[in-house]
Amino acid sequence: MQLTRLRLTGFKTFVEPTEFLIEPGLTGIVGPNGCGKSNLVEALRWVMGESSFKNMRGSGMDDVIFAGSNERPGRNMAEVALTLDNSDRKAPSAFNETDVLEVTRRIEREEGSTYRVNGKEVRARDVQLLFADAATGARSPALVRQGQISEIISAKPQSRRRILEDAAGIAGLHSRRHEAELRLRGAEENLTRLEDVLGEIDGQIDSLQRQARQASRYRSLAADIRRAEATLALIAHHLARGQEAEAERALEAAVRLVAERTGLQAEAARHQAVAAHGLPGLREGEAAAAAALVRLKRGLDELEAENRRARQRAEELDRRLGELQGDLGRQESVARDAAESLARLAQEDAALAREGEGSAGSAEAAAALLAQAEAALAAAEADHGAAQGALSELAARRGALER
Ligand code: ATP
Ligand code: MG
Image (cartoon, rainbow, N blue to C red):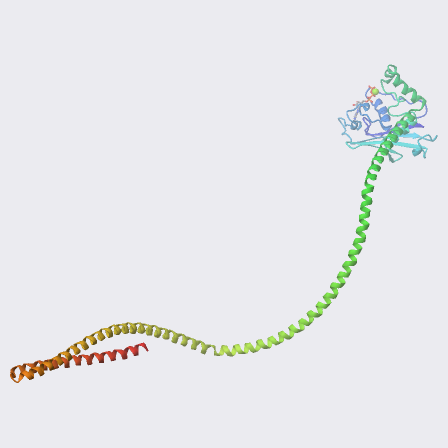
C-alpha cells in the first residue's frame, strides 16, 4: 500500500485546497521557517486518526481549522484527504475492493470529525486499523516528527520496542488484540448481565405461571359470565316483552279512561258553566244572608240584653213579691187582729148593751168605736185586695218574662 496524494482544504495554513503528490522515490519539502512543513506531516497524522489535539500543537481539535490571518477570515471546516494505492490489495477486507482508497477526515467547528473511506462514512477505529495494518498511523514511529530522533535515542526500551514492532509489521495485530480483548470483555459483561436477567426471569416464571393460571381461570369465568349475562338478557327481554304487552293493555285502558274522563270533564265543565251562571245570584243571596245573619246576631244580642234585663227585672219582681207577701202576711195579721178586736168589741158591745140600757152615752161611745173598727177593717181588706191584685199581676208578668 502506497501513499500517493495528500489533499488539504482549510487545514492550518492551507486555507486554499492544496494537493501534495507523493511520487515514487524520495519526496522532499523545502521552505523557510513557519511556512507549514510540519503542518503537512500533522495533516498526514490527523487523517490517519490522531485523537490528541496536543499532538496537533493546539489547545483543542478545532485549532486545526484555518484560524484566519490579517487578510483572510477564518474557516469553519477543515478537510484532509489521503489517497492510497491499493493495487496489491493488502487493505482490510472491508475496504479491499478497489485499487485506490481515499481516506478523508473532515472537521467542523464545534461539531467534531467524521471519517470516510471512498465516500462511505466509517469509524475512526476502522481508519486507524487500516493504517496500523500498513505499519503506519498517527502514533506510529514510522512517522518521525520534528525533534523526534533525539527523543528515540533517549527513549526507554518500552518505546523502542514499539518501533521494532512497527518495523516488523505487527502493530496492527496489537491493535486488533486490544480490540478483541475489549470485545471479549464486553461479551463477558453481556454474559454476566444475561445471567442476571436469566435469574430474574427464573424468579418471574413462578409468578407468570400463577398469572397464566389466573388468566385461563379468568377466561373461563369470563365465558361463564358472558353466557350467564346472555341468559339474563334473554330473560330480561322476555320479561320486558311481557311488561310491554301489559303496558300496552294499561295504555289502552288509560286511553279509554282518558276518553271517559274527558267526557266527564266536559260534562263537569258544562255544569260548572251552568253553576257559574247561577253564581252571581248565589253571591247576592250570600251577601243578603250575611246581612241577615248580622241582623240576626244583632237581634240576638239585643234579645240577650233584653233577657238579661228581664232576669234582673224578674229578680227584682221576686224580691218585690217577697216584700209584698211579707206585707200580705202583715196585713192578714192586722186583719186577724181587727177581727179579734171586732169580736171583742161585739162582746163588749153585748156587755155594754146589757149594761147599756142604763147609759145611752156609753152606747153612743161604743157605736163610735165600732164604726171606727169597721172602718179600719174595711181599710185593711182594701189593702189586702190591692196586694192580692198586685201579686197576681206580678205572677202573670213573671210567667210572661220566663217564656
Ligand atoms: P520550522 O521550519 O520552524 O519547523 P515549519 O515550516 O515547520 O517551520 P510549521 O510549524 O509547519 O512551519 O507552521 C507554523 C505556522 O503555521 C505558523 O506560522 C502558524 O501561525 C501557522 N498555523 C498553525 N496553525 C494555524 C491555523 N490553525 N491557522 C492559521 N495558521 C496556522
Ligand atoms: Mg517545522
